[in-house]
Image (cartoon, rainbow, N blue to C red; front, side, top):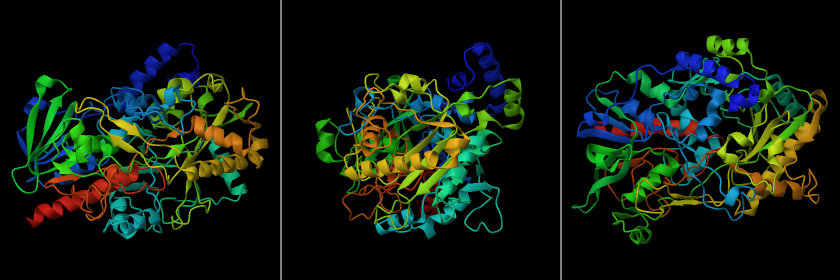
Length: 606
């Protein structure tokens, strides 16, 4: 659908068929990672639940020792859909139940006013590579102050100086110079700088004209400024954690990877004083006839993400006792923090219209463009979408220690509201259908450190039922005020620099022109925009919060061990005590790398 909007409707079916076949032949995955569930052993040293951004790392690192047996369980299918490999096709995957969990948030009291029922989609990856296989491939470590804050919050060993070696361990950053002392070119994850569309270059120039510095590398220790986007794209195709960590080690006989298999709960031995995880119950394709228990000799590790990991803990009897008993789930350990502390980045899509400049959404694609992608991995198909990032400190927050409070994504083309269930906007409050006919580009302010905190809870004791996801967007007035500042800054960059004249920019697309009381570029207008069409940018964290064992909010300790039980850890974005300053995929991979060392240290100590 994304491609369809770009090239029009003429001969679309034939062209898409040719593109699909060609891209599939070039990018198809070799060495299938799907292990037949009936061939699984009954016991492994380590069972990893989830083959996503962190779980794939663990599968690789733990199985590097041939004496350690590892099972990685993925609920979704293998990552063989050709769209997974094609960067520009990412948005299509969000709405595909085959590779994405089709979650929806609970109706919001203070946000999503123009969304049907005040609910938006909440896609999470459900395939090998997890969300790294469906995301925008943007690589952002975060700010050093983020991790120093983690340590100050009781996460000993997680300061910037502690995590930097793991960021370096995971990446193969290109191009790299001798002066890049904080970067590395020796890791398995391919990281490169996105090639910029001419409109993106114009935005980079406009930012500098507006007084925002150009930052050559926002992943160094200085994050503030505007930069070309660093991505996990290699030779024009997505480089997920399945590509980086799993596919190269498929020949290991001590590593088994099973797909289309869902974990219903963790099994515990409760005969001792401290409950001990001994295995997991699994179902192939959620079929009740296929249920079986797989045992773990050493540990069970949940890497199911910020939605999946707390859900499994709750289903297993780990959570607030009173809430579990209401659902008929026996309490194994009263741990009230499970599912709480949900934090997410809120984004507002601001489209600027132009009367002539061709942008990413209006490229005329011909045979040569298809050939350039298939042969050289270049052109529109290889774009991540956001080709420039801006990190800005409004100086509003005094508790961030210099970390930015705003981020912006620049996309050299408008998004298509009709091609994604994420934009299920109400026709009565927005004229969104007209939006999909304009020439334009998008500058999207993102709230990096929300004060609005949500939660995830169970709707039923059935593992097949999605949990209740309530991010509680904009419950804090400070969040609304910061996003207004972001919209004001975006408007200034585009409309008060030479970019306006050079690109013949007409102004912003007014989603609310049917309301004459709303005047563009006023505080009232921006507030209305944030509350009506602001939504998730898919970065949930915090629901299995890491911290000191003495902190009642904590779910795992700094070794990522679930507090109050034995042989169970959580390793994914859910352990982050606070959001990082930027896209969360890179920190999630880093967590996987550091966790592998923590797990192996305990293994070899024994």
